[in-house]
Length: 137
Image 1 (cartoon, rainbow, N blue to C red):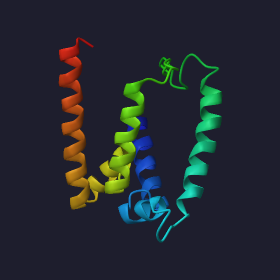
Image 2: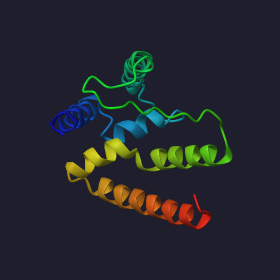
Image 3: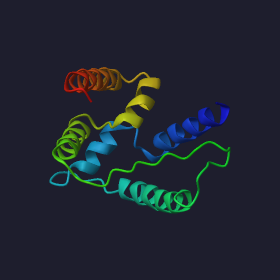
Image 4: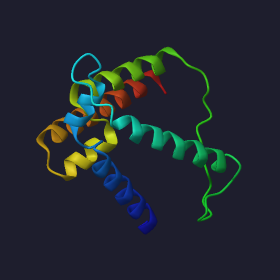
């Protein structure tokens, strides 16, 4: 649990230092037709590079360095639910300047916009669960 906490803390600090927890900076990055701020490209490229090498390494292992089982997603097909979810995610990110990780950091920082976002995110997760239960999924 301590390692999980430290990883989460490092992730949160990275979001703050990189500017990803600042909705104004994120919205500036997403505003291609206005006053575009390309600085987050470096953050995203860095994240993609780390993720690429990490997943390449992890893909060859069965357990973590601490001995727990590695469970990677196995789905590879693109369906309507994935596309709709992606559109909703992008629309929410574009309207609020937050995605879930930075929103939780913003919540910890006491940002009012993050409080509203996290409450809306939790409501959306609850609605999804209700729909899934009704569908029998």
